[in-house]
Length: 274
Image (tube, rainbow, N blue to C red; front, side, top):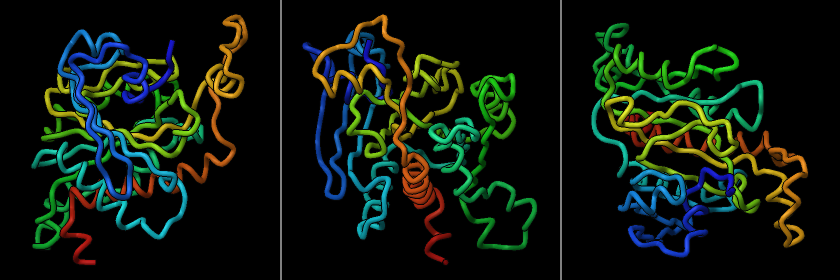
């Protein structure tokens, strides 16, 4: 079974793509948009009906002179997903496991603004910013609470117009590690790519639109062996999730790209002011 969170990889395994539309574009990224209109096609690859945009570049997780242009292009793609109004950002992951820290690090580098109206009521500029709330709740093994349950309780309390979920993904092609970003409007099953699927975070569950964004940081060992040898390994061979040795650098640079791009969409007037 293909172990991946990337819809572009799952679609590539289909012989019949009826009900699925693919478009390509991009200047600083190679951008592929996949639209799944058909429930049966979505079911065949374990994906829900929705819109999935994949941005690929070897510079996602390393320094480059085109960083500002990449932020602009990624921001333009994100704008198509995020509605007006207040936003709750959920950075998923285990802060004690480096490949799983992408969501936490990205979320912590985004400015929370919801409290400005009550804490700084006389600051006309700060109180004019879009309301942004941020949660980094850890994982079930640390808290005993599903991320979905925590987010749902916050939705009931602060009533955001949209949720942005940031998480580390798994891929099946080692060339996509740290070089791919996926955005979707179909929600997310945290951990599904590593066969540790948690409760769904989606519009159907939360009652408001959910935008999921992430970068693949792990791939399973069987996939690596098959990529290198051209032969599928014996299924009795133990399998492991593997991450690159420079994963700390991948998380550092890719999270910076994500957090700045999201911030540029949510509070552009703040960045213009500074």
